[in-house]
Amino acid sequence: MKVGYVALIGRPNVGKSTLLNKTLGQKVAIISDKPQTTRTSILGIKTTEKGQIIFVDNPGIHRPLHKLNKRMMNFVYSSLETSDLLCLLIDATLKFGHGDQFVIDTLRNISTPIFLLINKVDIVKKPKILLIIDKYKDLMGFKEIIPISALTGSNLDVLEEKIYDYLPEAEKIFSDGEISDQSNGFLLSEIIREKVLNHVREELPFVTAVHIDKIEDRTKDSDPPLKNKPKNYIKASIFVEKDSHRRIIIGRHGSLIKAIGMEARQEMEQILGKKLFLELQVKVKERWRDSANVLDLIEKQ
Ligand SMILES: Nc1nc2c(ncn2[C@@H]2O[C@H](COP(=O)(O)OP(=O)(O)OP(=O)(O)O)[C@@H](O)[C@H]2O)c(=O)[nH]1
Ligand SMILES: [Mg+2]
Image (cartoon, rainbow, N blue to C red; front, side, top):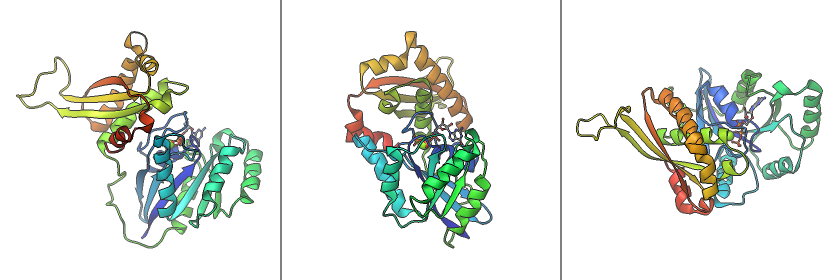
């Protein structure tokens, strides 16, 4: 069996989480069109007859300004050190810039083999891809350069083949049915955050965090009744940094928080396979991005 860890790395928004979900055929990580969506490392395990690829989705590589972002970058650094192979994703629609140079500099002294995955080729013309290959092949000794589309799944079979060439012979680490390492609570909190990200702009995505406060199965006779509501009750807090943020997320007459709650509940019901009553509260926690307590709370759900 070939078994090993493959880290997905690259700038924010290049499509790392999209690639993870598409490869696994299941949603493990949330996705948005805003940068810095992923805040922690998420394992996605793909077991085939050839072996087991343990993908490690990571936060995007960026210059960290808050404690939150330093923690995000620490996840990246540790997966650079502990993986058997790195897949560096780039966005084929964007010009090479400072952010890309920062990524290259971050990888400069890493001895782990690196693949370059040129993503989003579904929306660029071939000559542009050739120019990107030309630019990148001189920057670093990539073991493979593969144009892919994480969205359509194009070339992901080729990628999987090539990945196996670089994994060591070993026993499986996870059992066949296991697909991720994250707790149910964390996934549910992320789904709520994804729905928030879909609805907001500007700094709101960066200042929003979600914590699942309670998951209750009120099926015992002694439980307090929930009038006309399903018996499975989930209570979650959405943290923002200012009252103005709070007002945006609540929306006019509560319209936005209602939409967020409905979208999140529907997806959570699908995952859990049962009807839910989801209660959301928006709370202001000034500068939570620099508060170790809040960061511990949201990280360890
Ligand atoms: N057209 C196209 N869009 C893509 C592709 N892959 C990802 N996207 C889009 O790019 C955006 C970012 O995708 P994510 O998967 O969240 O990116 P990420 O690298 O995980 O981002 P961070 O978690 O912020 O670091 C989303 O709007 C995706 O739909 C692709 O192959 N083609
Ligand atoms: Mg991501």
